[in-house]
Image (cartoon, rainbow, N blue to C red; front, side, top):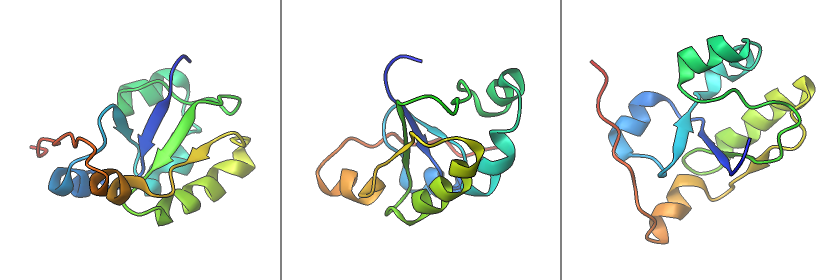
Length: 108
């Protein structure tokens, strides 16, 4: 994969309420363990972005404040995802620094 794959591990309802970082994709923390065990086609169909591979070095996790990404990292490491980066400041830091926010439409 080229470029950075930014994955927000918050729940969709939280993204709908607060927005998300531009260019980020959503993979809720409660679904991570099962999601990365899907094949690439199933993953793409369910989440709408390419499944990160354990050897990828361009995957960055974000959440609201940095707590959930630590949990996500601990779930992924035993599955071979040892190169994942964590954005510890996450959404709150991005917003505080004046970063643009993408508003997520509410689900039907």
